[in-house]
Amino acid sequence: VTLRRITSPGDLAEGYDLVVVGAGPAGMEAARIAASHGLDVLVADENRAPGGQIYRGITTARAADLARLGRDYAAGAGIAEAFARSSATYAPGTTVWSVTPSEPETSTGTGLDIGISLAGAATFVNARHVVVASGAIERPLPVPGWTLPGVMTAGAAQIALKTAGLVPEGRTIIAGTGPLLYLLAAQLLRAGATITAVLDTTPRGNWRAALPHALDFLRSAYARKGVGLVATVARGTRVFRGMTDFSIHGTARLDSVVMRRGSEETRIAADLVLLHQGVAPNLNLPLAMGCAYAWDEGRAAFQPTVDEWFGSSLADVSIVGDAAVIVGAAAAALQGAIAGHAVAWRLGKLASDMRDREVAPLRRRLAEAGRGRAFIDRLFRPADRFRRPRGETLVCRCEEVTAARVRETCALGVTGPNQLKAFLRCGMGPCQGRFCGLTVSELIAEERGLPLSEVGYFRPRIPVKPIALAELAALQKSDSAVAAVVGFVETPSPIHETEETP
Ligand SMILES: Cc1cc2nc3c(=O)[nH]c(=O)nc-3n(C[C@H](O)[C@H](O)[C@H](O)COP(=O)(O)OP(=O)(O)OC[C@H]3O[C@@H](n4cnc5c(N)ncnc54)[C@H](O)[C@@H]3O)c2cc1C
Picture 1 (tube, helix red, strand yellow):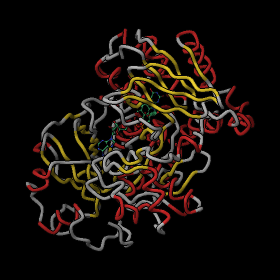
Picture 2 (cartoon, rainbow, N blue to C red):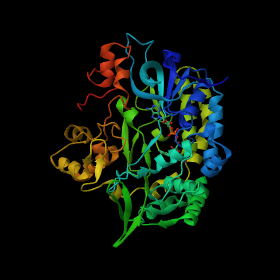
Picture 3 (cartoon, rainbow, N blue to C red):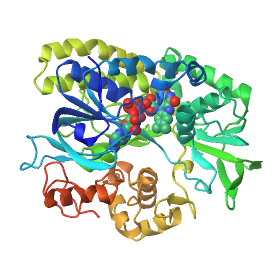
C-alpha cells in the first residue's frame, strides 16, 4: 500500500469517511491509523510536503540539514515514511477554508461539507468526520516597532531555514521567551548565522511557579534537550536575561533595539530581529465551526474543549496535536494515533474492546511524553507586560489598530472581541485574527476587569483562510450554499451559534 498523492481537484472523490486537516505529526498519525482500519481518508495540507511545523521539509532533508536541525527533527522521518506507506489520500498545497454541515440536496450523505482550495480552484468534499490537526500559531509579541521591516517571527525564520536553507545575514537579535526561542538560536548558530544577542523576557518570578514541577522535568527528555540548547546558545552568543522591556527602532526599516532591565537601558544596533513568545492552538477552523473552547490560565491561551478521544464538542469533529493543546511533537503524534482509532470506532470499523486495547499503550506513552511539560509551561509563561501593549503599539496589523484605540474603545463599553470587530475591524483582515486575537482578548479583559474566560475569543468566519474571490465565484454548488459558506446569508445550522456578530 502506498499513499495516493493528488494535485488536482479533479482527482478528489466526492466524499470521504474522514478528512484530516494538516499533515504534521498529529495529522499524519491520525490518517495512517484511521486508514489502517479501512477508512477512506483524505489529508489536506497547505504545505508542499508532509511534516507540519516541526518536520517541515523532512522528506527532502539531506544529512547536513538533519545535523543542524537536531535529533528531534530527524525523528520525523519515521512518521513521514509510515504515512507514505498508508492507504490515505494526500492533497499537498491544499487549504481547508470551511467546514459546515452537509447541504442535504447536493452532498453524498450526512456529515460535513469541507471547502477546499487546491491548485487555484475551490471545491467541496463531503466527509463523515473531520480531524483538525492544524497545529499552533505563534503568540504575537506586540512591542513598539514590531511591524517594522526587518522584524520577523522566530517561526518564520525557522521556516526559511527548513524549506530553503536560508540563514540570516548581518546583526541578528532574537527576543522573547519560550523553548523555541533557544531552539531557533541553536539551529541558526549551527547553520553559521551571527547572532548578536538573545534578549530573554522570561519573567524571573516564573521559577517559583515552575519549581513544584521541577522533579518531573528533570526526569523528562525535555531536561536533556533543554540543557544542551541553553549551553549551545550561551557558547555562541550573548544572552541578556530578565528583560523587563524592549522596543524596536528605525524609520524605513529597523536599525536598533533598546532593551531595558529595571532602570538600565541599552541600545543595540541590529539588521534583523526575530520575535517569539511561545505558541498557542490555532483556533480559527474549530471556532468557525462552533466548537466549544476555554481559557487556560496556566498556559495563557484559549484551547478547544476535547474529550479523552480528542473529540470536540461537535460529534463529527476531533481536534488533535497543537490545535488542541500545546504538547510537543511526540505527544501530538500519539494524540493523532489515539484519535485515528477513536474515529474508526465511531464510524463502525473497530470494536470498542479492540480500540481500547490499541489505545492503552499509546496513552501510557502520551503520559510519558507529557512529563515535564507543566514545568516548561509555567517557566515560559509570558509576562503580562509583553502580552498587553499600551499606547501607539500596533495590535491589529491588518487593519492598523493600536493598543490605545482598543483600550479607548473598551472604555465605551464594548462587551467582547466580536463586538470590537464592529468598532475597529480587528480580526476582520486577511489574517482573520491570528495575529491580534489573543492580544485583543487580553486588552478587553484588562480594561474591563473581567476574566479571560468571560471575555472569550473572536468567532472567526469562513473562509478561515484567504481564498480568491474568483475561486468562490466558480464554485459549482447552489447559490444559497455558497452564500451561507461565505457568511453573506445566515442560515440556521447545527454547528453554528446564533449569537449576532459581524
Ligand atoms: C512556527 C512554529 C515552529 C515550530 N518549530 C518547532 C520545532 O522546531 N521543534 C519543536 O519541537 N516544535 C516546534 N513547534 C511546535 C510544533 O509545532 C509541534 O511540536 C508539532 O509540530 C505539532 O504537530 P501538529 O501535527 O499538531 O501540528 P503542525 O506540525 O503544526 O502541523 C499542522 C499542519 O496543518 C497545516 N494547516 C493548518 N491550517 C490548515 C488549513 N486550514 N488547511 C490546510 N492545512 C492547514 C499546516 O500548514 C501544518 O502543516 C513549532 C511551532 C510553530 C508554530
